[in-house]
Image (cartoon, rainbow, N blue to C red; front, side, top):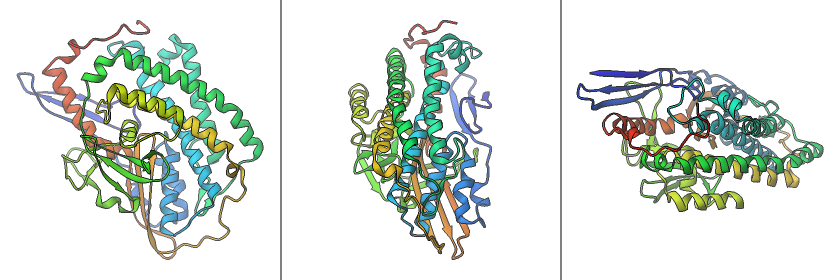
Length: 435
């Protein structure tokens, strides 16, 4: 028996290790993804004031704190039967789109692009973001500019560019001025230029690596994502579930999530594997994140993004089970978020000063907030007593929604590499940059 262990797995937030066990004749006996770090947020939220929780949970993730901030405030307001003013909801939606732009750009340029640009077998010392900065300085500058656009807009709306503070029970603690709105509207055309550049670069490398895209990581699973009457959304809607054959099997309200989202506890990882509960585990393993979202929806919310969705579906179909297509889907979502940012900034509500209720009172209740984080469907569920104290909390983050499928994909890939030697058969293009 041979055991291969990779620890830590880099290019992700959090802590993950991979273990592959091979028999003496080179067959894959098992492959596991292990998360052995826990942060106990569900437990130490107990006893806290509900109004403090949206600022506490931003520390769960340094890359997508805005998503936790907004899912949390939705859960608090749901528990207390609060409906914030329309302008506050628009600001929150704008904050989430700004984060999608920043996070998706970071993911593509820092976590994905180096493998495509330099080739998957290039020296890791070169095959990284610093290598792109040195060898493709123009692309690197555009990458940083696009990331900064999204992150600085997060700072304007959220009060901080990381760990936002402005969403409060009943609305937003601050509005934006007409001057600030006008300044950011002027920047949106440049942001779209950068998004289009990123999309074309991503499509080129996807097309160059199409043999890999269509042969490696083809993993039929269920898919989950928010939809607003079938339209792509991050912020508000029903939760859609698609089966591996492309049939929409559920379209449920967030408050009913416990009827459809099961949590399976493995004996080798602290993180639960979330699955489609009516089918059971492991048959109901699903995937969240960008490709899952565009699989489950009928259309994108904005016209340019819809054009690109149609192009992806012409090539890869619906649903696409190609794991590498997550990168393509991510770039389509950047396009949509820039389009949507311009729409929201152009609306009169976005500069309204009516952004918070004058009087908010705590009450006993249970609240659920579900939104789309950059890497998948995010659930915050809190229970409050009559004094507004958290008595219980349940959080399902994107990692939970994806980990079962990550492990399935790991086992499949291990067999293809160690048993089928697929890496020796693939048609790989010449690297854009040779090392």
